[in-house]
Image 1: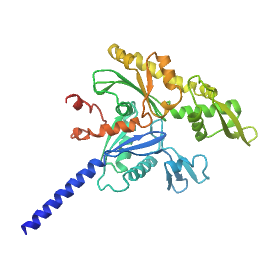
Image 2: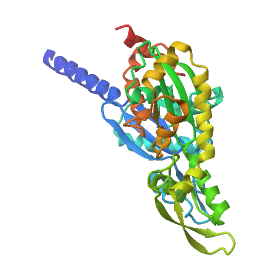
Image 3: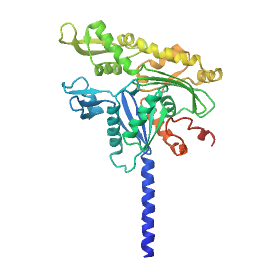
Image 4: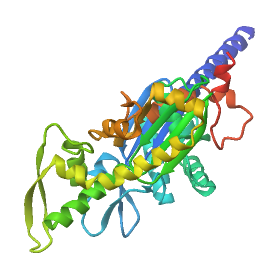
Length: 367
């Protein structure tokens, strides 16, 4: 009888340890971007990276496709199906669809094997309203989060880019995402100055669409514009003027038509949104304390986000700002990787309200 009790006790202990491991391994970091959604699972790394697009039945509201499958439907759906992006300008534009999308991706990332509701950390722009924060918290909770933490994108981007932000030294991050550009100066584990501009990669695409329509009377879709941006797009005078065939609909005849677009034309097309971002960076630099300014002059600024991969952006910024500017090696996934590093500090946040993730690196400085 005593032996049975011992075995039962050992079984419960092993079960508890296994549950604890599963719980720790189930912590999730989410880069909830306008263009794409990236999920980081603690202990595994990045497990999912898909477009933040959802296809629904217009009549019944039924979810038909999510992610890459829905992205392929953009601009190609019949009347009763609509492919939409539930996030705009870095924040939730459609709460119900965002909740369904998050639930789908979380289950896909965890492969439905988690028996415990995971703790989730979600990235948000540096400057958002309380209502927008609450919408993210509630959407994550409804999607299955045990508790939700918010981390500002520049903080996550800096962590993911490998910057030593816990040191008493200035670091500058320029995160050019799909819907927003976040500019921040960090020091001593916190954000000294930050600015969020709702101009980013999607605006580059829109600018290309407008340019082609204005100069060629050709209507193209956002998928085509994004392909042009990735293939030949540049924001700095190119050494080689590349060309690409662009197919669209002639607005005069209504018939399909093909034109040839060059890199120099994309330079002219994207100049307006690029200048808006550049002006935002300059305004932040003008407010930086002198001591931190000297650090930034020495170390420069790091570019992260999908928009940072546009050819010539680092060269243009370096020339205009007069400081070194370089693109992070993990530009596209830096924010998600940063949430992964931040997840390691969740246990230090016990007793704190899970609203806004801030100053978690103070514990690191005290080591």
